[in-house]
Structure formats: structure tokens, C-alpha cells
Image 1 (cartoon, rainbow, N blue to C red):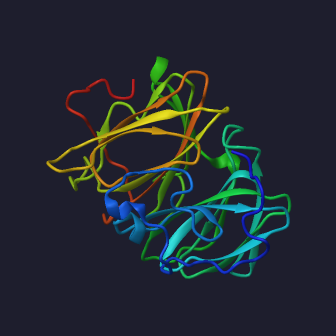
Image 2: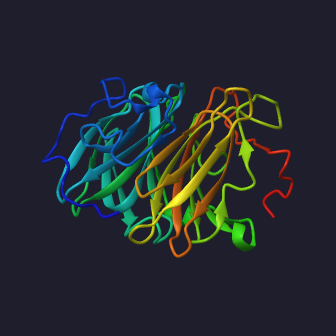
Length: 296
């Protein structure tokens, strides 16, 4: 995706976490949200808890033209501002956090900014770009902070045609948040990711945590596509087999999710945003009983 033309000609009022109504295709039970279907105001994508039909996880994608800025009220949620393409500054709490960003999501790890709940922020970009705002409703107000790119833990998960790179920029244990868990995954073209199928929709201490999850996708090269599967973990649970394209999103309220399958010749990027009601901020998953191979 390219930044493209400016979406907002100068500062525009932030729609705010509770204003609306935003486009709301999820009320019809849709889990696959094609690019543009949740656009609202300055946001190319806006998924807030009310629109998703759950309590915690949120994601927005903000597009700024050269020299543009956007005010942002964090409300009752904490947020991470993550450059997808381009650089920006985040002004809040009497400080300015400068983000160097990156050319695109396939160029490597980026720096990021943490915006606490109850903050008035302003995001500005000299050259323009696209910026993800990954959010979660929370209770504690932590300090605003800068997340340096060199401190982001990066791991290779899986092997062979299941190998992918995971960038744990806001994973539990990697960066301090109250509720938010967020990671980036890059899957080489032709590989399977989010595999074996796994779930996190039951509270089982030490074994599984309840987390609402959003997938946001970008795909390298023109006409690229991928496939996302969700299968029910309970009667009447979430089920999806979708062809996803650049800028699409998928909601995972429950169920076994995976695989995410990248088209040969087109690397697949997805941003995972998670949060839940548990007392501990943790990512605990169960693998599907029919798939015992783990992440090997």
C-alpha cells in the first residue's frame, strides 16, 4: 500500500473512541472486514470495541498527507502508535516523541510510541504516511514512552514452509502495557503462518487466557492475496474461510484460528492486536487437538 492522496486536508476533529456511528459491518456477524469497509473520518480503518461487539481490543489506521496532523483522544484506552509507512511525531503530556518509522512494513522493525489512557495527543507527519493505532481498554494510566526499534525482540517461529518472523514490539513481557498485547508477523510467500490452529477463548490458569484478537493484513506486490481460517471451538462459535487482501482485517472473538496462508511470490504481513479481561496480561494458547506438531 502506498500513502496515496491525503485523506484529511489539515487537522480534523478526532471522531473519538465513543463517537459515531462508525460504519459497522460487524453487527451482521461479519468477521472479515475488507479494506475501506470500516473507514471513518481520517481513518482508513477503524475497529473500536463497540463496532467489534466486544470489550477491549481496538485498531485504527491513520493516513496523513505531507505536513498534515491529526488530534487524537485516547479516552479509556491505551494505544501504541506504530508507523506502517513513513515517519511521524506524537505530541502528548508535554513531550514530543519522534518516530523514524520505515518505508513499509516489509522493510523491517520500526520504533513506536505508547499513548496512555486519558491523553490528548497529536500525530503529525512531515512527508506523510500511514500509522497504525493499536489499542485496548484499560484501567491503569502508564507513562507515555518511546519504544526504540533495536529493543524490539524478533524471533523466527516455525520451520520449513511454516517459518515466519515475529516482531514482539508490544508482546507480554517485552513492553509494559496494562492490557494491550500486539505483535507483527511477516510470512514468506508460499508459507503457512498462525499454524497449527490455536485458540485463546477460555480462562484456564497457566494454560489459556481469554483474548479478543484483530488481524490487519498487508501483502507485498500487486494483486497479492492470502487466506485466513477460523474454525469453531464451541457450538455456534466463530467460523471463517476468507481470501484477504491488502488493507483487510479479520476479527477473532473466539475459535481456533489458523492457518494464515501467503500466496507464493507475495510475502504476507499481519498486525495482531489482542486484549482481554484477565487479571494477568498474558498470551496463553491451546493448540487444536488434531494438530500436535506445535511451532516446530
